[in-house]
Length: 253
Image 1 (cartoon, rainbow, N blue to C red):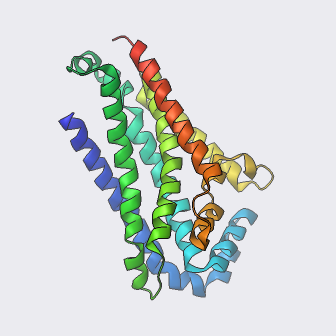
Image 2 (cartoon, rainbow, N blue to C red):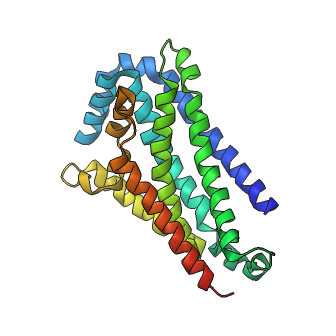
């Protein structure tokens, strides 16, 4: 387990560095975005993207950060990280031929799987909160500010969405022996879902509506977490974990 934790720590640090780099660049770009929004809007190739630019401009720096950090940065990098962290959790042991050795540890299968799940989930979630905590300092470089409490609530919402993706991938890892097939399936699925999000006539069917800019803006304007969205996401993840335990208990080397 020590090796697994060290690996998860390295994953978390790597995720944090890339996400923080994107966030810092976005925050420092804010004055340029604000002053050239008309030109940027004209460059957007799709009507949905032009509407998104308008939404960011009208909402001010709060909307801009929510769009750049949570919707863009955390969704794109976070989904890739969620799939990467979970796809080999069990299937990777099969692929490496170490499944029996892993099971030989003097702990129950339930605990073994719970530890593996929790390690990856923390590696996924902690960088989101850590990077969000740096937003006030970054915005101060461009004479702007944003409430830290709102940022933490936005991080909770985003984390619940990404943990749902992670939990789905984790369940597939319990069912499969091929991590790369899992990665291809999940990344293909999420790419399709984002494509649907950009099409106005079917955007309401996309999972990305669960983590839309509007959801984060509702938090920053005092609405708090939307439990009509956050609640089902948490329940879904719990159900996926419970199913993973059932599947894992029946797997044989």
